[in-house]
Image (cartoon, rainbow over all chains, first blue to last red; front, side, top):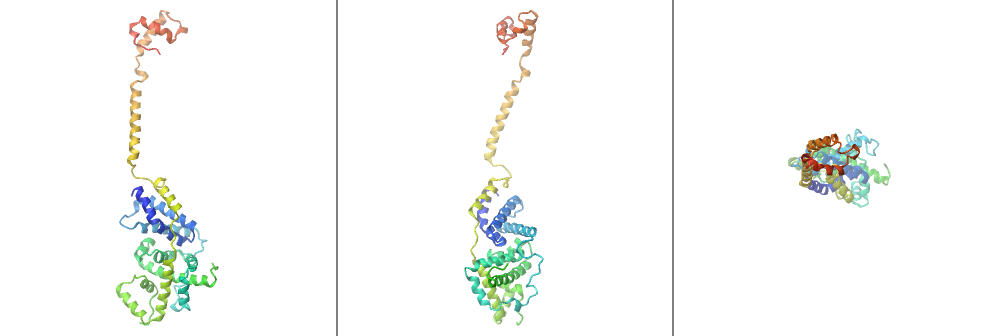
Length: 182
Length: 155
C-alpha cells in the first residue's frame, strides 16, 4: 500500500472506527485516542494485513484489542469487571422479561432516550458492549464479529444475546432512576 | 413446542443468523407462543434503537492529523524511496564524486617541488639572497637565472 492508499483508508474507515470507538469509550476524548492508536498500529504492522479481507474488520479488531487492554489497565472504569458473573446467566425467562414490554419499546424509540441508551451501553462489560455494538450499531455479521473479537461464532452469538439482555436491564434501571444512577 | 426458545437462538433469529431448519422451527414456535413473541419484539426494538442512534463521524481535525501523521510523519515508513528522492540524491552524489576527483588530481604531493628546492639551495649557497629577503617578489626576479626553474610558480 502506498501513501495515497493509506490516506484513502483513513477517509473510508475513519467514521466507522470513530463511531465504534465512541460507543465503546463513551466519550470523545477516549474515542479519539482509541482511533489514533488503532490507525498507528495498523500502519505500523501493515505487513500483517491480509489484503484479501476487508480493512475495516482488521482495523476494528485492532481497536477492540486496544480498548480491552485499556480496560484491563484501568480497572477503575465504570464498566463491570470482565470476571464479574453475568446477572442473566442463571436467570429464567420470567426473570428477564419486563413486566410491561410495550412502554420500553416506545421509550427506546424516543429521541431523548438516545443518551440514556448510550449510558446503559457504557455500563456493560467490555466484551458484551463490543459484541452488541458491532452487531446492532455497525451492522456486522456474526462471522465478521467473530473475526474482530477473535472468538468463535458460538461465543459471538452468546455475547450478543447476553449483551442485549444486560443492556435492556441497564436501560430500565437508568430510566427508573431518571438517568442518574451509576 | 411448549419449551421457550433457547436464549441466544432468539437473538440469532432476530439477526437472521439462524440456518434454515432452525429458523423454521423458531418461526413455528413463535406463532404459538406469545411470551417468546413479546421477547422477540422487545429485542427488536432495542436493536432498532441502537441502529438508528445518530452515528458519530470522525472529527475533521482528527482525520487531517491522522493523514499527516501516517503519510508524512514518522509513523509512515515507505519500503522504498520514491523517484523524487533518487533524482536529487543522484545529482548530489555525482557532484561529490566530481569534486573528489578534481581535488585528488591536484594534490600538493604532485606539485613539481624538486626544481624549486634545488633553486632555493643554489641561491642560498651563492648568497644571492639573505634569509630576511625570502619573499615572493624577490623570487620573481631570480627565476630568470635558472632555466630549470622557469616554469615554477612561487606564489
